[in-house]
Structures are given as structure tokens and as C-alpha cells.
Image (cartoon, rainbow, N blue to C red; front, top):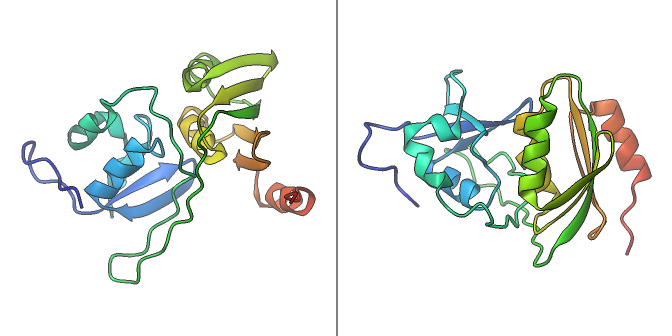
Length: 193
């Protein structure tokens, strides 16, 4: 397990992160480093010590700044992080999906409060991308559907929604569609053999 840096004072032993409205954790310093290296936590991912509510982007927390010095072209091959087991309980095994090739995505956005410019810049940073209709993008990148969603959710507001289709691997991911829509999607979208 990676340890926290020696300089910069003490660091909390356990952290939580926000993915949209969902709070995930606890994570150790080493687990957060791994999430960042895999693209599952980005500079804009909000983090704070367990038990606190002073959320800050990871890039602004001194102990985590070096997490984001690796190449912007590092490809993420991991899905959205699952909430890990509590430190005193049994460890939860994370299901991992990988992709060794470029995947083609369709991004459908409903923006009510997000900054379009910042979001558009982030989409273009992920890979080859073009907006084909207002708030509908095509993206080709070496990422999983969960990694695409996770990279974009920090740029979305609480009233914004995102729907991501991985056309190469027959997978879906979404953000902020609500439980009723979640149920409808799961009843319609059937994975093919």
C-alpha cells in the first residue's frame, strides 16, 4: 500500500470522494493514488477526509497534487469505483472491466447549469470527438464507459444529466437520470450474446 508523502503535514488516514451526488469511500491514500492513475479519479474529483464536509478538487489538496503529473494520454481501463468495504469489515472485491482498444461512444447531455465550454473542452481532451447535434457527441477513446462518465461528471451540475453509450462494447453508463429512468433503462437494454 502506498503511503502518504512525508512532507506537508499529517494526512487523514481515510478519504471519501464524490461522484455526482454519490459519496464513495472510505479510501486510503494509496487507493486514491491508484484511482487517479487509472483515470477513475480526476483533478476535478471532489475529496475530503472521512467525517468532514470540506470538499475540494483533488488537484487542490496538497497531498494529492502529484497524482496528476502523469501523461494526459494515460488510458483508463477501469469502471466507476465501487464503494469499498468499511475498514473494520471484510474487503469487497471490485469487478473490473478492461478494454485494450479504442472504443466508440455516443454522449447525450441535458445541460441546465453546466458550463458548456468547460465540458466541451473535457470531452475533446478524452479522445477524438465531435458534436453532431446540440449536446450530442461522438467520441473515440481508449476508455471504458464508466471512465468516460467519471471524467465528465465533475463538470456537470446537480440538474444536468449524461447518458453514455459504448457502441463498441454494448455498454451503458449514465448520470443523474433518477431511479425511475434507471429502472426503465435496465428493463429495455438487454445485453446481446
